[in-house]
Image: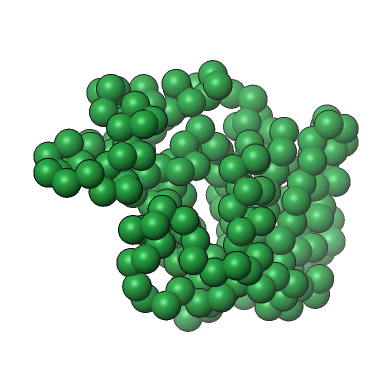
Amino acid sequence: MKIFVFLGSPRGEESIGYKFIKLVEKNLIEMDSTNTMIIRRADEVDIKDTDGSVMDFLAGQTRFQDDMVNIEKELLESDVIILVSPVYAHNVSAHIKRFIDRLSYWLHIYRLIGKKGYIVSTSSNNGNEMVNEYLSSMMQYLGIYVIGEMSLQSEKIDSQKVFESYARMAAKNIFLGYKSTELDIPYTQEQNFIHFQNEYRNLKKDSKEKIYWKEHGYFEVESFEELYRREMVK
């Protein structure tokens, strides 16, 4: 299992999210020594702000030659994608938002179809639900099947032992979720897929996105679940 993690805290190694993910990594390797994890931290990477244009969508590729070029390759080579964000004003961090903004030209083409996803949010005591909901929605648009989420609230974690138990639980859920062939595709993910399928089928001009849909057989399936299962066996 190849796992990609993006950590959206500017505090790097001092952040709760980083310490948590390192424990998750330790547990996953104990479960299976072949499991590998790439961790990209917001404080270590150079990700430029999107310029607000639609050039990425029109060109079908990222415009800036920064760390997102390699990050995109790492995402595509991964089996499981984990997004970790602190809660800021009941929302994701600016670093996570920048990361997602730069991937926005993938949102209409389900570029990460076949991947599985896990979400971790950290806070003092609240706001996790809204962050998890947003990250789950973005993962769904990217084609990721979300296998779980974890809300870490520091006021409720009163010892290292409790912290480690959360990490073991997350590692177990990730490991079992990756291995499982059972799917329970969310209604919203199915409806979004059908919406885009109809939009691009009826689009008169061949945009980059419609061409991508044609080339990858998205018009040949009747549901997102059918498409996802097809990608799983590749």
